[in-house]
Image 1 (cartoon, helix red, strand yellow):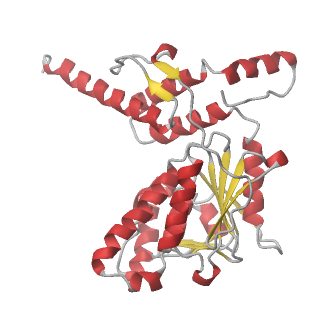
Image 2 (spheres, one colour):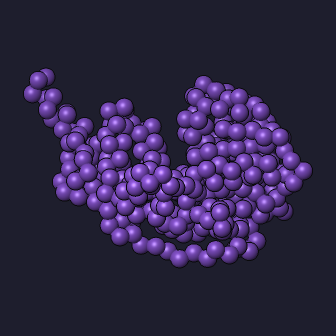
Image 3 (tube, helix red, strand yellow):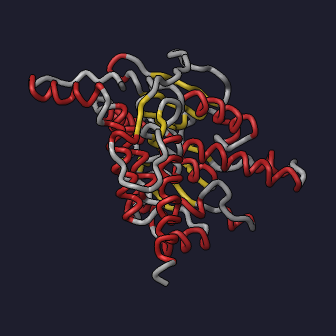
Length: 329
């Protein structure tokens, strides 16, 4: 037994090393783990920061039919809004919409100018009604699994975006629509919004991450109850169970949740960009492991902020009693 312990410990340490390296990789181009770190204490010397590739992206609104990408300007610079605009299909997740979401997310994840992403609907009363069942009915059974895998992959990509994401739910969010919202870091909704994982009514189960993310958001027992019953909650009920962070009375324009999301995004803008990214990474990865490994992840992430110019700027701004001017470096 005693002889086996070091080997077991080594395996755990090696596993933690692989996990921390994977965390580093998730930060995108430029972050890397140097040396032959193998589960030992992580300090600043273990992490290096290299030049990041930047992908150009227009600040003008994209006018494609089903998804509009807007990079906001002036005091909102750094906020990107993904507006789902598929009114004739109640914003349901069609093949084309999934393709467009995938393309947009792929561009955003490597754009260092992006600070916060808001996902909203541009169709009054609807966030996303889930899968496009009319399109699904025309699919051969052999096509369904691969397409659901594509939906799951895109939703996972949204969950793994390196910057804060906010779902502004101003209307119906059912099935895949709620799964899309669950992939965001923060959810805000109008009190009139309706939310639920209703797939069991169709003799299937949530396939876009709902069986995994809903229990993590509200607890396993209640998540089971909602999925088993296919129950739909309004905004107040969703807030009561912890599914959303904020609930608001809907306004005449029908965009109360979006306005709250924009308010939150503005709160995030002054903070250090590198710190925001590694804070999200530390929280997300730490929640999936034991506390000891989670603390090692936090230490590794903290170490990545130490050599940054932004950290020095923050200290200087504090000393000079002025707002910091962060550059994400």
